[in-house]
Image 1 (cartoon, rainbow, N blue to C red):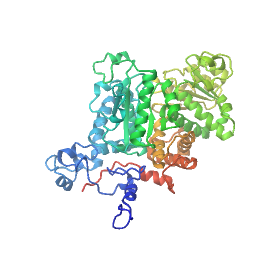
Image 2: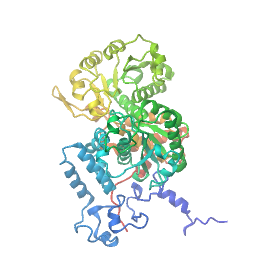
Image 3: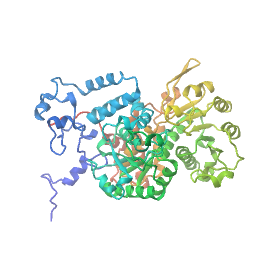
Image 4: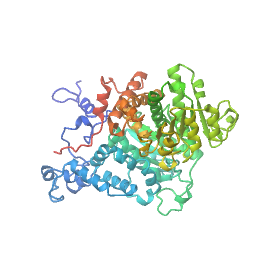
Length: 590
């Protein structure tokens, strides 16, 4: 019997829906992708939105940019002043207003209010002014926002799952209004940036990360879901705060914690399917490694603190080789900090050297040395080390102080992931500069106050010779009549494009080779023009183009490894990535 799913031209309705869902195969209900930019859309909520309801719907609200025709058709006449603004004029006015604020947290709150009021204008503003607004919607300002989240809380921006919901997490997931979710960023708030346990108030991190997935990577906002898992907090200051918004109890641990996470991961897959990307964010070291190891073979999971940081740092090191010469295998790496970020970066460096030299990874790890709070990680400490540090315990006599480790190892690359500010002292940096013509110094801890050194310190103490990058932004430095521009090894270079690549290819598991592909794609975007300025990362003003290239490279590797499920493979993956990208330009309403 002939299929009933036919239109007049014989094309299957099911096929038509798939074509309407370029961005990862999900139907473009809100007209968010570049591919649908010129099409008219109907502003649906439960019914066609009109009047006051339309002005209160952030997906469809255009504020003063509704045309006279749209105002008549959707019962808006009289509800707005008579003037009609362009989106560009709205954008200019908002940027003018934002620049009047002198306190970054005030700008953050204004941006969050805009996101809740007019989604497209929020993303238009962020995309067009990314270098100015990125530090506001993400690090360092988001750290302060999380610390004060209870006081500034206005409207819920994500899903809160607490111990009270144990046994019915699937039911809670179904309460979220959007059903076609493709990316979840989840935290338990135990290790927010370098600020420690902020409990339920860590929600600012998933919200901020997913804003960047959309603005920088072009992933539709309607398919993004921020989640905070509230298992309590050990932060006494928060527990005593009358405005704290989370459970007032100490953190659940052990079996109780593991059972809640297991129920969560099962419910996510049951509700959203095999290809839902779950990004773990700001979990404490012990849980971060265990969750990644446990679920990476059964779910599409990614830990930005471990894997994203590693990928962006590796990209910077690959690019830096153009300045200092040689290959990664020619260098010796010393880390201050042996937690999630440090060991994640170290592993990806060793993996890249292994792939380029065909040497066993056990051998390439020996070029990487770690210093933790007890000193150099060496074999004699192996029995007392946490499991994720053990591969980095090499044969060497115990060394307690960082400066002594320097003299013993004589590294060519110094990387800070300690979360402790000002630990790269003048003595340390002068030692680096004494045996390296161009010392590579990466002070990666966030926020700015926790950075191992400032850009000015790195350049001054190395006599202007350092290749310097930080986790949070620093201003340019004038040294000896020359303007030196510090790089920012920001994860936002990687995870938005990486996520887009996974989604558009229908990847089912994250393989380490996909991270290497992302690093290589980012490093390839650094041109001679940027090298001349001492930069080893491209400017954020080109981030959408960078993300499209990262997405294409990741997708290509996924197809090569047989991990991609969206077939057939597009011929031009860069163009395909660009067509999948969310665009915030206002749509015309019928």
